[in-house]
Length: 170
Image (tube, rainbow, N blue to C red; front, side, top):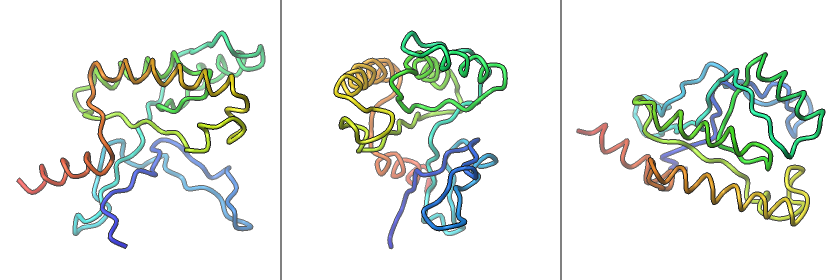
């Protein structure tokens, strides 16, 4: 179909427990996939730019969490978990931490933000149910984009892929 870039891989995450739309199907296991961009084909015609994911054992406790939510965050800190730049309304501190980690990593030259378009409207997802939730989302987006702009320059996935492909032809 002429695709040149894909950004659907979430390295270090196994979606096998997520049921698919087809009976008996489940999500992909990306737990061993590369963290950095790579070409999917030998012809180098399709570039995969994975979502930025960092495994951590850090504790991130939000003031907006319930007691049960705080207990889950402590459990995740002990067990370890994948953190990505994906707002939930309760993870501002972990997203700011992640931006700093990636900015200080000489091996990484991008950070991938992720959000579904339906999450920008109240009730469009289970995560952002009310108008107040959406306002908190916008607040958090403003904060994380301001922080990210200190180190990173915004661009589309297509623009980023073009720069990688140009580097690869040199």
